[in-house]
Length: 250
Image (cartoon, rainbow, N blue to C red; front, side):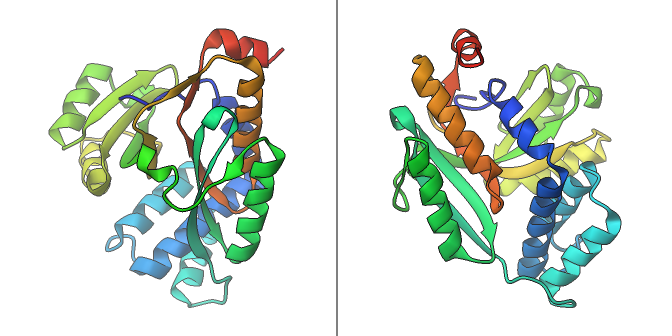
């Protein structure tokens, strides 16, 4: 799983952002609306919507908010005209980053993200400038209570998964991008509890940051991009050792 499960050092960043419940709920509602717009409002017939609703319920998004987001997506009630976009760029030390957004104004989003990159010792790249360094994969997160590592690994591989890793936060199953729904469905049928499931950009290789100043700059940029209102996900190809992280946090 080269390049994956390297996020224990920066989970506090995403945790801090996701703790802002209004931002998290807005992110979940946007994903539901876009999923319903593109594939219809029936979760049983729309795999992406089913995933979005499942993720939203796991984060305690109220049922009426979910229903409203679906209806906005299908046009039953008026709502913002959202567009999906993916932007690429570089942080300090040449670290590659991909930012997924859902926005009602792509011109504003581009300008805002370019400003964030520039203010944090980075620069926005052209389409394709870093995406070739990543692979599109499916990611399924499960809590420790879902089962033992060996049992879940056997179950996941049997369902068509590519790999699985476990750490102090739980288990992460990786699938081919077009097998996410299939593997998730098999795990659910086996009564394994799933925290979330989504498509991700996984770096093909990871750059180890050994300079404290560079680490601070990269983490600051990652945090600023992740905290931007229209951001859905941020992916990057760096890792930071515990030793360097301790110095960054001083």
